[in-house]
Image 1 (cartoon, rainbow, N blue to C red):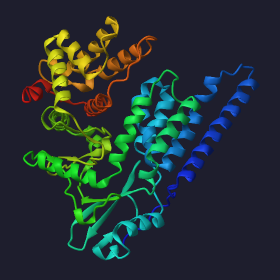
Image 2 (image 1 turned 30 degrees about the vertical axis):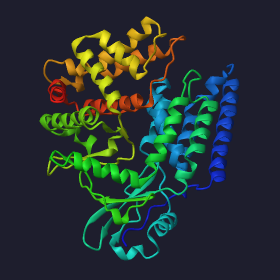
Image 3 (image 1 turned 90 degrees about the vertical axis):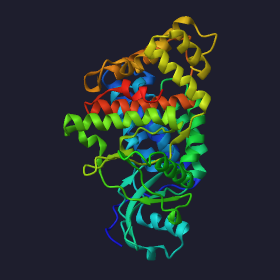
Image 4 (image 1 turned 90 degrees about the horizontal axis):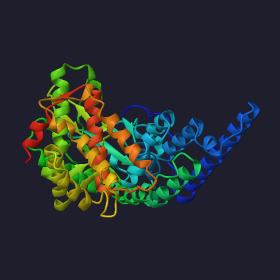
Length: 438
């Protein structure tokens, strides 16, 4: 065994211990509100309740405690930081965004306990090396590197104890806490998102299911040498422990200094994959976290990691999205309107101006598909325009409609790869990509 583990914090596994941690958080938020009110009074200001609640200090408290709870509690914070981030003050959105990458790792004793339960107490004999220092710690589990006795280098994702059992209560408790704390606007209806988050999290917490999706992606991309997918090690995989071959490479966002043609190729591969996922595979890995991708500078392959958030998209739903994309390219607003209504973006009672606003957002999102030649994501303000249009529509007092969760997860994935393309200052000929899928 190699490497001494970094200090960690035990994950509260029991329902009551997790509720107690959330109760402590609520007390801290209330205390922060009182302190801020006293400070404003001392300055001769009249405190406003919403301003007392919605402070960077309170956001820090929420982010810190959720990162220690991990599991569904942290995942809710991640979802909200992505879906509601543009509705929050920038400094608070930035603090909550920490939850997309930061988690406190488990201590070595808890790691050993999970592995003993999953593999039996003699599991160490199967390895030449095992690093107890996690390579990464996220919301559902943390990743360790090891080498098997047969010489294979592997990555092992170990689930935090109590995650599966606490999903429903965590989602309810954290959503309620964030609402009461004032960290979410009162007009933001998160109930549909939270209901689907529970279903999604139960599937993500089943590593056997993730292993099947990983294997399926490997099969789907077997002939595409530009991509690399880890191979499952089934004999060391259970519902709580996922073992796969270790993939080498650098963080995908670290390629910002690469030559233009390399950056263009990376972004083209990622966006092309999303289009294939939707229109060809009808299977989408919906988590756009940059950490789910790496780049092999030797082979030039884009490495795909983490398949827990994979969703199957029904053929009839994909057919409607195809109509929307075709309509956005051809300027056929009538076809787009019919498809948008069928998907559930709005219904027959929705005001015409609101329907037109939604369709205009679709047209904007498909702007790169209408580009004459490569679309320059680095020079585009597309994300800001879509955000502003969404905020304007969301402020309409007589229009608040949450689309189906499948649509929201697709938006998140597409928005994530657009953001990565912009980070890479990449140019992508999306019209060529989409023509190959019609």
